[in-house]
Length: 160
Image (cartoon, rainbow, N blue to C red; front, side):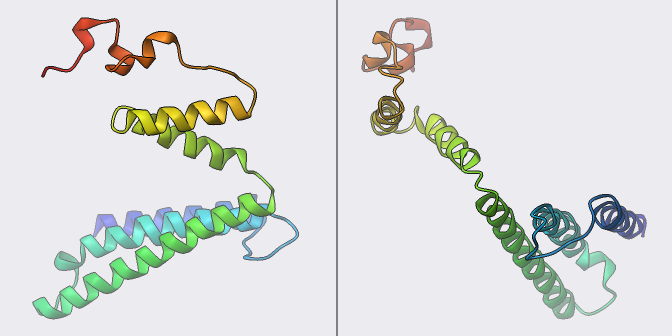
């Protein structure tokens, strides 16, 4: 019961914040911040709260097991749909505002995470991007060893 009241309070506070302090919601608007407000609403209310309600459906819905399962799956599908549309509105906001450097940061971060796994491919990709943008050779000489970052440090090498 307390969790349901807390979800209603969070949804109310988010709606008041978006409608009063952030000046509304819209899928299409001259004010691009309204598009990002749709993202916020869908991710908080749709994705987080509805998914939370879906996980509590087995205890909170007084019905037979099959009805609880249908209710549970329906709420999870609604949360998934809200999450997908919320991510779409975020990318749409970035596209309409012409904010591409955030996407480049995500790609470079993903590549840096992949360095230990697929070291040669990601290292070559990062090096090619750095050369393209005029940074030259960004990897020190020791990183070209077969052990990568831990080339000169024996205590960091993986055990074989």
